[in-house]
Amino acid sequence: MHVGPRTTASPLAALRNVFPLQVLQTLGWYLFSAWWFSEIYLWSAPEDADLGWVKLSRPNSRPALNERSIYLHTYHMILAVAQTAIHLYYDYDRLPIPIAKRTSKDDRTHPMEPTIKRLQYGIIGSVIDALRNGLIVTLASPFIYVIFLRRPAWNFSLYFAKLFWNFSRTAAEPQGAVPPAFYTLFYRQIISGGCLVFLWQTANLFFTVFLTKEPLKRGQPLTNDSKDPTGSLINGLKAKKDIAKNFAFWELCFISQRFPDRRKAIFEDLDRVNGEAWKQVLQASIDTIEGVSGRINKFKTPPAAKTAKDTSIAYPQIQSLPQLTDGPKQDNIFAPSPKATGFGQSFGATAKSFGQSKDWTPAARAKAKEAFSQASDALLSPERKKKLLGAPDDVKLLTGPTGTSKSSFNYSSIPFVSQFLRSPIGKPFRQTYAQRLRGIVFGEPHGQVACVIDAIESITRLLIASLEEDSFGQVSKDVPTIVRLYTSTIITLEDFVHEDTGLGIHWSDVTFPSANSSPEVRRKAREVPEVDTVLYMLRTSLSELLTSFERYSRDVGLQAKDIRLAKAAAGLVGDDNNDNDDPFTS
Figure 1 (cartoon, one colour):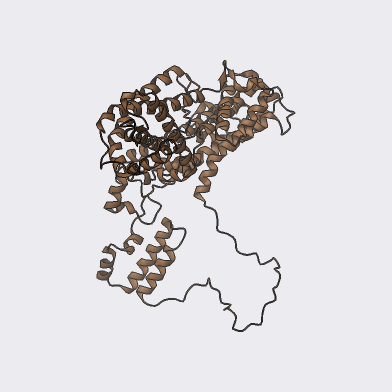
Figure 2: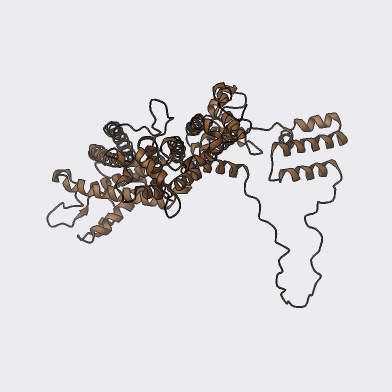
């Protein structure tokens, strides 16, 4: 169970995070519930339905297994496997918390509809899902049962039935190639399968709806009932578990917006063990916001290679046997190889050196192109050079224009690969731009979108409220830190989503507009709602902080450079009214 959405690059990558433990756990619970439902359904069926474990043709004859009940049990197990696949694919384990841009009319960052309305919509959808899934599995189960599961299901049922009845040797095998009277169970499959899927769907619906309610109790924060409300809130903000941390930041957002008494309690709590309450709340929020820039910078600058052995350390000498052969050569093994003669060897050495380079960037491509051009001008005739450049080989890849993908070769240019990726079968293998951006900005495998938004909103509201509610004047000292944090995060995030300097397009993202598309189409394709919401919250919060604290810039320690950069990041450069109030920009 988690709160954030999946942010893995592709659905196939998400499978690695749930396999095998979560898959087996989910499948086990669905199989158990399907078996329990089957037993109750068969037990409650009337005798004329002929759904018992065994059949007695005559009073003195030996019993025989009833394949009708075996088939119905198997049908419910197939339904459980199908529901497991749906559960994992659509991520039923997620607790969806909607996010929205705060406006002047509605300051909620997570607008939630009333519980009754959510249940009404959800139950209607559960009925539709139950009928659809039950019908599909009903139509497919006869073929699956006869081809794959008939003999294993028969042997499994016979093993347990032998504990209570005596069977003849002829009962070891099912009779006939096809089970008799399949059609008589069709309507029972529809009814029982629809009821079973409806139970699964509604159980998940009620659990999700009631667990994702706002962290309020009778209109007050949940931590009000604890002995130490502020301490409980801080523990939640520092929690390692995803759910506790998300709901703690959500509650902090409510406190910063609606509850002045709780805000004052945070400002005035100075004697806490691990430091002032405000400092702990501030640090937890800063760590969450800084995570955005940290993940982007980590992606841009991958970890360096392991350093060589330190020669300054004196290692102990080991006494060995007398040397029988010459020692290894002392030459520098990393020295460049001797210069090759001839165009083929020269070009091969150059192409190999650039092709094996870890930094295969447009700059490296330009170097390879320049080296090839110089070698070809010196050794080839114009006709030979033209013929070589026109060949569809690796030379053309080296000297061709740089693509949007980060890889050196775009495999989607192969017709078969492109058609496969565009098909529903190839969808799990696509690494779309939006999904890769979410994973980098918000983390994998589940993004902390709600935490980031609540941290921004909470700190902004607390800082603004401190102008009237902070009796000790400790909060205003941290305004420059938050202004610089918001500014740097906006600059880093805007640069990363920009087409020229930002994240490239993976070769498997065949749905992304091509380079020949209009700039407007490509710009819209790069718009990711969650990232846009974070940028909007950062700009709005930064402009509100400048509006509230710019007149006190000298007192709180805001420098002229910080104010100018913050205005540029927030889009307030052309606002003359704010510039007149700045004592440093005159």
